[in-house]
Length: 244
Image 1 (spheres, helix red, strand yellow):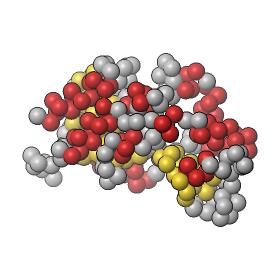
Image 2: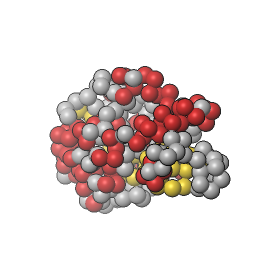
Image 3: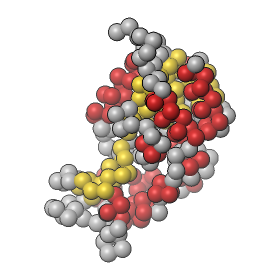
């Protein structure tokens, strides 16, 4: 389909780096959660989670203490919501489960949560879903809370290692990457597949690639522009420029 000048043309991929200034530590950066405590990643292995009560108990405690519950959207999150309001955004594809894009005003329709969301928790057996805050409220009495409906294992709706990405999210992301005239990757190491390959897919489909990340990524050589400035400075300025 030919692009009309009034069609949105920009697809954005965001990773943990867009949320670090809101107080949520990233995973792989120099001060990352897993960099400082490699064993923390084991709490997110689906096999161990299902098998071992101890992993679930430690995992629920970690979620209860997570910085996400107090985090506020950053200038970069707000700039992306602004880009959507201006009609220029195809979609925000995010690897984050912190809900900060929506908190900043991005719509559910144009926010694709590739790694799920911490806002809800589901039963692995009967698939019933609850607000995660309701489950966390039970931890004092039940450190490994079971499903109230069937007694099954509960897990936040975040994609754990060994789980598939949500099908519809991935399809939505592929379409948005393919349709983009400009693809902007913000605060992502571009090392986790299949998400990182969306950048290459966009380039293969004719998009310009802009990478905004403090550290080098494996896709920098494909980029038309690589920005190393702090995200809260670089992103609002970049989006202003792309809109004009």
